[in-house]
Length: 432
Ligand code: MN
Image 1: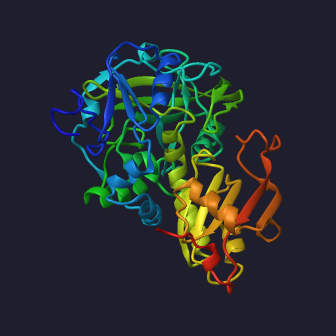
Image 2 (image 1 turned 180 degrees about the vertical axis):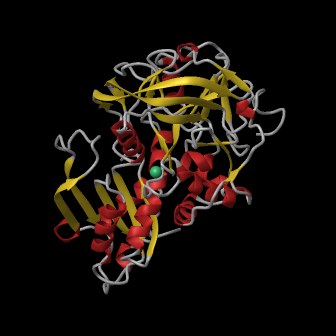
Image 3 (image 1 turned 90 degrees about the vertical axis):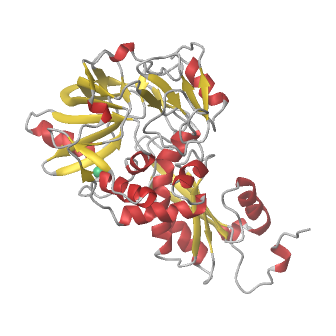
């Protein structure tokens, strides 16, 4: 945003490439009203300025074009850029200088913040763009976790059984609390990397640094905390605390599919100190919004691309669709070279993203970034008696309400590619 034309308070860590922000100066309630306002313009960043210290912003990254543009790329090219960063993580630059967020320290009074209560049946007010940074026995991890602000110093988090959960389990075995640095508001490189699914040994901050390097030519600058966790130099808000030995009931909470995730017993987080820039902005990811789909789904697409490419060299583009909430449904475009390529692409797409439930394979003349084009390909090129693949009894997303209780689901693929060796003319769109 240009000086003078943009917001009066710069959104320091939220990238200058963010071209347009709708500012709401009138008071709004963080209880449901902010959600309504965000959902009214889902592809526009909306900043609530009536809240102070912090103010509140959502829909920051609402389109894949807005993310790709930061890297000088189109949506199609961006999958490859993300794949390169995942395959070639680079160390961040640990700096000793004082970060802007280290200049303002206070005791946690989180109930005074405009933490949104997003949907009517949610258990309470939640932080949704909180990235947990941790270090345990030499291994580091970044991951998003929703955090229910039950009191001034925290509440229960949602801890899915992945890397941070493993650290918590190990710490708890020796009756130790796990220190965490929770940061909110960071460069897009970090927001993407924190949603990447990697090996336990890989520090997601190194993926962020590779992306940052690609975007700016410099490694990502980070601050090392006393507990060994790392926080980006550019962050709006940092909460220092610990995942305690206590558990509490968490949820319900409306999640990515737009349905309510159920109550579970989950670990309780206690915040000890709050560190912010001057005039901090609280980033909220609206559950079930396009920004939610993108920040969760974009980092899965490179893994699907890599998996399909290993069996079908002619893979051209991969996309998780917004209709499938950036999580359950995908489309892949291939240059078909062997008759079975379409079927192999279906199987490989499933192994690249474990939560994928449905995938459609099309020829590379179809623009997979337009749902209507994909549906056109299915309408004009598919014969279901030879193009359908149904895989019962597979493990899918635990969020899918149609899956059985343990997440067992039937996956299915549509091979809408044309058979090789037939005249293609009847299948091509005429043009003016
Ligand atoms: Mn990890």
